Length: 173
Image (cartoon, rainbow, N blue to C red; front, side, top):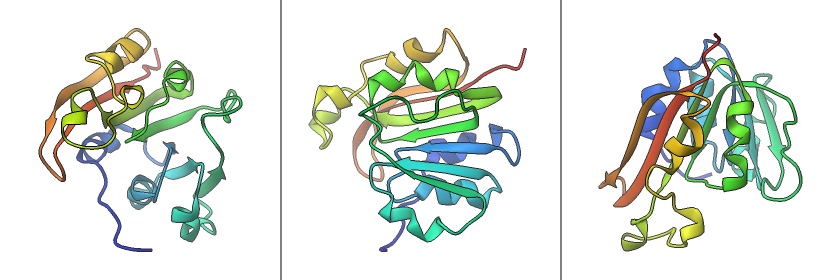
């Protein structure tokens, strides 16, 4: 395995809001940069992706559950299961958006950071199916969750990109 890409600064900024020692879903975990970061913060992690070869080094840990599954075919793989945190970065599959709030435990935290329209000027992804429309994350989550922070902005580093981000919580009350 090559050098690990650092966690998203958005994830770093808001991870501490996730209830201590909780279980966090790293949706479309890729090479596991967020799974590793969350494990270092003493969370339990469920890491899922179509290919988990980038995280097989975590397979023997008791605080990690690896799931190899195609998230875009078949039913939501978590049924009625709830998580203290859900992290989604550089991934967008719109049919899952309504499922994410329902998969948060009371006081759970959703941290979502991906590409937005306008990114086609800077590189991949360029396909509008994988780019968020203005306010799309707000519209998807603000009616069920308490928004902590939201951004839709140009990001110059680590590579130029248009990004949209939200951090939102499920209030226990």
